Length: 220
Image (tube, rainbow, N blue to C red):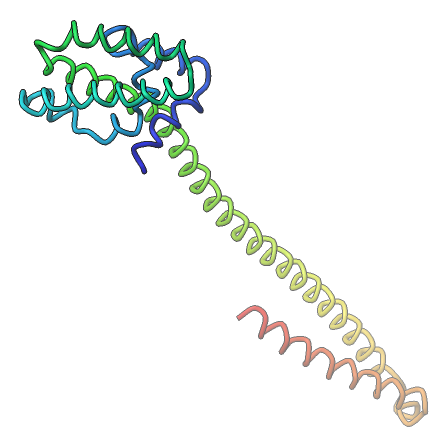
């Protein structure tokens, strides 16, 4: 049951917090009773009983019966020490609460409430840490995505700059070759060398045209 887990959770705490739990228990509500009757105790409404005399009286007598049942188990196990302790505890509880069961209900309700408070101080930071880690993870994921996009843009920009530089160099070479060809004597224009140069220039012109179209596509 979920409430039963409360007593088990307390056993998992570190020494410093266990000392706080230890301080909750004395002869007004012995830890032996809390330990042996954990399941039963956590399934009673002690808050309501602390303001309801009839319910408090009923729970007081039921508590004594639970102690008797536990005593019988120790008797069968021949656990003399725990028999002795339980007998003494029962007598003390009868002396303290027989005439005031409301007070007993209030003491037990307060102990269970303080246990929950101690557990909350442990659980809350863990929950906060989980939320913080999740939040940081989401931020990191967005940062990585942004960094990847920035890297891609930077790389693409560098490639465009390289292509533009190549186009400029190609254009300069074309202009130089074209002007050089223009200065050739009319008679030389029919030579094999001139024809080869015209062919190369035409290829460069086609390459320039293609490169410009590609660059226009990438930059739009």
